[in-house]
Length: 168
Picture: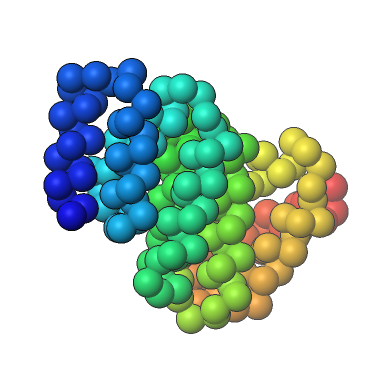
């Protein structure tokens, strides 16, 4: 059923991209399979094309929450953070997803996240601009307490950054 609905959505997108039924069909496919990649791309393109950023963010949160395991949830949050930064050019929302990914990483203590240093660097820029230093230090402390797969260089970088934040 999901494949047939996806086919209908593709036809609607080509034949009548302004038709309200397109969004309804995409939602029906996502209700059956929230991880379906083509449907997600079409739905995200529809939402971003109409500047419905809050709905897109909520959709990404739902996708991450419905990930089948903790590792896939962390990877989804990281992926969405990168999408917000690179595809949608929204560093603030990207930082929200990186924050969630890092917090999920330290909550488990076992599943490492790729690119922790890059995520922390973006958080330092975004949260630092807002003066949210304590929140940033909490993340750094949690990452340093549970190094779960972080290299020595990454731990050193985080420690130096946290020290600079704390003493500034």
